[in-house]
Length: 177
Image (cartoon, rainbow, N blue to C red; front, side):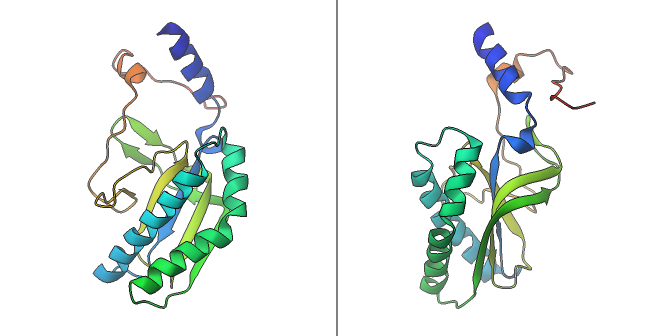
């Protein structure tokens, strides 16, 4: 347990925003049909990336793979959009994007710039959905609404070794004041 905790603390002392690759899917609009379409597109992309990232060992490899997969991600999204009877354009990019702080129980992603695969459907003016592609925290069922920035329902991700720390204990990330 001590060895694992030591590894865990060392691994997570690197800035969190440099150690994850996020997925960010933005709907055309906030109407119900566009929101359902966003979730269908998200499911297809998560399934694609799950297969592609099976042997991915670090965030840099994940980002490189995601960049190479942009045409396939666009094609996958476009096919789902058309299969649902829509003709929206889709734009996929991989880059650094600003995200607000988001807390899910004991799991917090602090505000900051994160590497992300960003998928914009149509006008991209609707609510958005996000998850962490690497390490894989996107493995949610298609019936799950996922980790939506505008979703009032909270998911809960816990790490047992953090639960064992005394209440009120705080881990400091390297470079954090």
